[in-house]
Image (tube, rainbow, N blue to C red; front, side):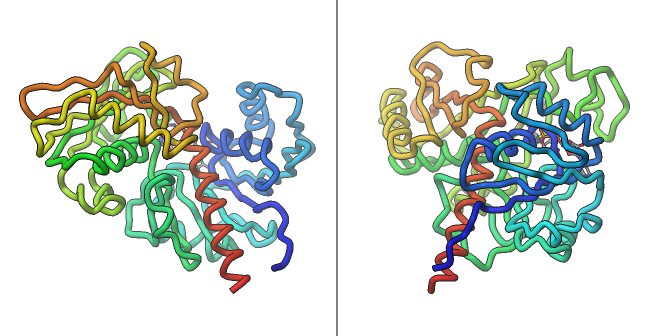
Length: 340
Ligand SMILES: NC(=O)c1ccc[n+]([C@@H]2O[C@H](COP(=O)([O-])OP(=O)(O)OC[C@H]3O[C@@H](n4cnc5c(N)ncnc54)[C@H](O)[C@@H]3O)[C@@H](O)[C@H]2O)c1
């Protein structure tokens, strides 16, 4: 097998997720970010990155390059995938973390411009080659996949919870509400947008919002297709989200402790992805967690004969880490294909 260097990653959208991916890659020896496309100016993107990392001095802006000891990434002020010349950077994969380009057509633009593969930071709006949630369906990935999504932080947390519990219990149906930190597409003050409630100030309101996870859950966990409703409440918290899930169990003998035990076993089987917390934590305690799901045993309660309510924590950093897990998964598949 030929010796390969680090996996070369391009990022479109250097926002919270893009910067977290860059920072994680900068501390790894197997992933190098070589090009970044964003509508922001290089000096502002560099400034934002330095404002939130532990060692800001590591990252230098040298002309249009963002440089540290492990990466030299070209920053390009570009706003459409069709304009970004990925081929000249020799990328292995492009992560689109703009949140703007989620359809096949835009993903095809990335591919046509030299990205061998494109990975969405969020759920797609069209059917694409694969949705991969680390800890659930890595086995389904194929080296032929070109357009991939790693779900979203909320979708991953929900799917991991359901997948873990379905190993021990039969679940009839359920509902999920994510109590979600506000996102950058919300306005700080009341500001007319395309949605009534989302036009209200993120800083002072609990804002009910739809959530798309239910639309794609059947793609990830076919046994839950059409069985789980999903909803969001965006709250005035900057980071840290809480997944509130109510499940109707087929067997009335399932109690809170057996659910907690099943989640402890799931955490032991998926270290780094699922965790369990027995302490009485609050949302700020989860900031900086690289897990995708932190199950809160104190939140499990039973109502009536068959309903179990659970609470789990997560935040965006865990999702950035999973995006890199998916990048590594496909790199391994490519190597296996080359070797065959
Ligand atoms: N962070 C979360 O908790 C969360 C949760 C759910 C959904 N999302 C969505 O996922 C997406 C990414 O998340 P994020 O938190 O990193 O968002 P973000 O707003 O911090 O980052 C988006 C980045 O993409 C850039 N961008 C926007 N349009 C672009 C374009 N046309 N071309 C190039 N760059 C462009 C922006 O300048 C910004 O740097 C957003 O749409 C967000 O709403 C985020």
